[in-house]
Length: 361
Ligand code: ADP
Image 1 (spheres, protein in one colour):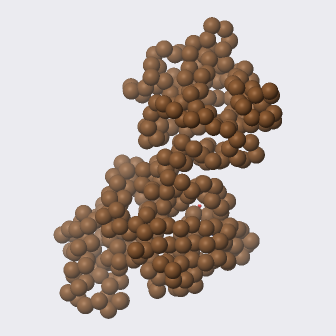
Image 2 (cartoon, rainbow, N blue to C red):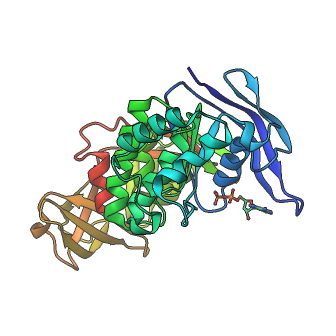
């Protein structure tokens, strides 16, 4: 049973940068929460504060009710895996893992048992005698994870652990790490700027912006019901059309659609997979710019009359060609004003899964 609580934590660096701004989060026992956000949004600073590598300027952090805010890193029940794994290259795998246990004066027989068990867990059983330099990048990262896990931390902290690996390996490792995390049942906080990583691994995602939380929700909720235009534009592919509402009609260039909100500016958000296209007799809403055929479906890139671009996912790409005039019929829309959601239609019958939409993005 390990619960991490972060309460109103801020970090202001000496140069006055407010990297983390009154941030609060509770990570439940066994939960994996991803901190997701653009570069500079404060993810690493927050993680480093939980690990004890930065001191908060304000706020409180507890693990299972115990205040850890000012406890030095080596005395915290946290284990951190960094982007660059920093294994000791002059030691073999076993010694890399045994090192921390020796420092804690664990008996040699117990060290051997724990190191071998954790190597099995990360799929490197029998690799104890290998030198770190003889391992692939993915294997080295698994040793780094094992080195954290062998100390049996209450909270696992992962800072972009796959960033230095190629795409294929990254996808495989994130499945493995998620699998290991669930088997061990360890409470985990994970930093990434990769939305596919967050969507595929996390129980909940915290979308961060300027040191603050923009939205905390399950991955499917963040994807389907983004609460702000920032989240809408950051997760997956989203068409964001800035326009005006007059008498219940939103318009942008030649495109208009009913929107039951008061008059004023609005941003309309439509996912490509929720946008139907049909051939227009006259000018239509816009013209096809490019059609990409992915085999299973297609992506049509459109130019609206005023130059703005829109993407639509279609089942039959061969029905569209460059220059063709088309009419847009969204099946689901959301609308934002002043950074907040003002209207949403039910996302009924979305033609595709979150994962598929990301693959196409
Ligand atoms: P992220 O991990 O989301 O990319 P960071 O936590 O690394 O963001 O950085 C958040 C902000 O804090 C950025 O503006 C960054 O430049 C600033 N920052 C990070 N570390 C320091 C530091 N040691 N001194 C001053 N500013 C820093």
